[in-house]
View 1 (tube, rainbow, N blue to C red):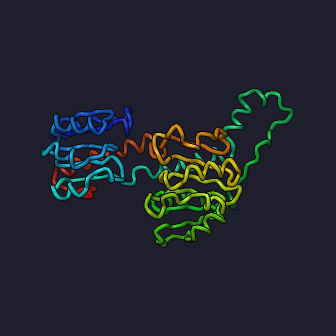
View 2 (cartoon, rainbow, N blue to C red):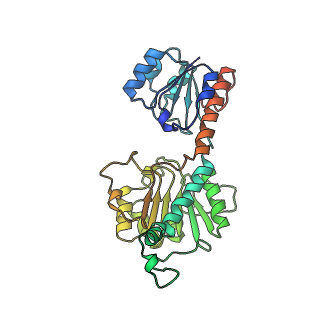
View 3 (cartoon, rainbow, N blue to C red):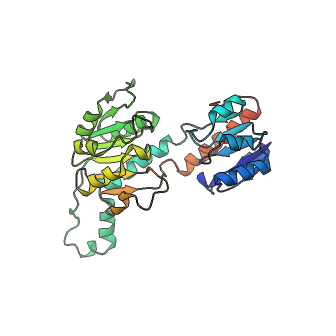
Length: 320
């Protein structure tokens, strides 16, 4: 079996791929453009293609009649030509649930960085100002307790539910909004979008991107939020309108935001959010919420098991 990995950079150079060698010949590339992927598939004629961001189009499938499986190193598989795979009986397998704990952890990391003004206080000490202080403490940047606050969640999937559990442990009242209109079997109250906006002190987004969530947080949405509210986006970038959020932060319509996802990644040089350099208002991380070392190990362990199962004639995590 020939296994071609097209973009190993997307799961990190620190993750061992040695176990894949027990399945056959492994050919790896850190990155591949669409053109490079096409050429490599033509030359190598792999049985299995492993991809994360490279789009496996009809053209790429046709470049190698040997392709029997595409192993997606992610949950979403919209970068794979599913209809072609179905028509030609090519297995497609994905990985779900590997990053839940990682994303939950990062949700609270973003929140506390903004909510407790941690950059300001760290710099206050390290700048030498604390050395000169007449008092043992310092109150210049006010922050609040989570206990008693309302935490609103947009998207109560597996990640949203775990965030809800942790927020509850901090003493928050948790409510959720479902763009699909689904009511979950949970202790947490489902509310309308307007109720979520008007009543939440913190809103965290864990929803998928679709027609109902695209541009969901726009000027009108921010106008309905509390002035002391913090928005966290760990779902998909286009759910939040960049220009609208920039305006909301600059004009103090809301208090702060923490983002791990942006509409275009890597971030575009002209993204208006880059105008906000005040980290007590905005923190942006480069799509790393999913990427703890443990989560990346789990991811590639699952990919390995998917390929191994396919070789054994099993349909583990098959979407086709």
